Image (cartoon, rainbow, N blue to C red; front, top):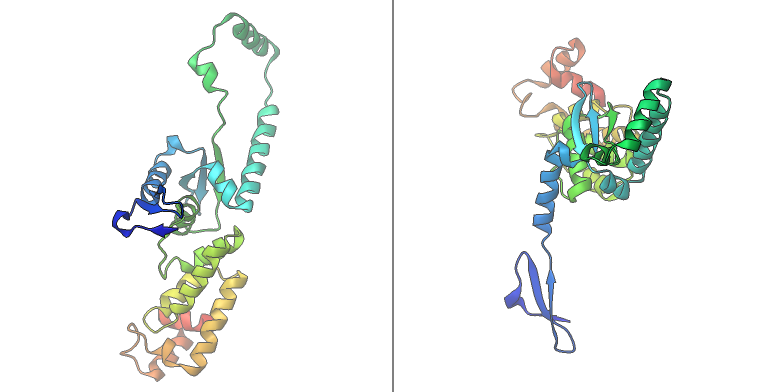
Length: 253
């Protein structure tokens, strides 16, 4: 199949196949991504809410997309649905109240309210182990296939991708994290890693930083924030625990 480049743009590609019959392939990925971003910003359009971090910040999503993209999200949502059904079934309703409800259903006509009750219930799931900025990016990647990652969120996303079995995101975050092992970024990278210090991948990353620092001592000691200090001053600060850089370097070394 040969493409006619004169008809190509961001939205569609017009091409001619071997039989000389024209074929137009529409690819409007950008509009789809923007629409999904909009849906995530409107709670009424979503059917699951995650309460993230210690502050329980609400982040919204769509169950169908989450469950289809991640097996772990599918199991999490399924478990929450079962838990909700069990709690609902355990609610005790007085005999007279239940009888009144039955009589009301028998004599009344279907209303908008009664039809609405048949819709799927919105789920609320607590997720305390991630930072809000990390989990927001995780859900955006799952829904839209696009995510922006910086040195402050890469370690969190790396661990989230591992936990939710998102191999492509995990590999990309690992490569980016390793590329951040340089004097102007390494301290921020380590500070971010401290939030996930119990993770296997975090420990592997810290080991990578440690090995590089053996051959490049200036990586940890001569950053823009500590360049004005002598090596002796930095060592004294490490012992006395007076600077942030000292704390970060001690985490690695």
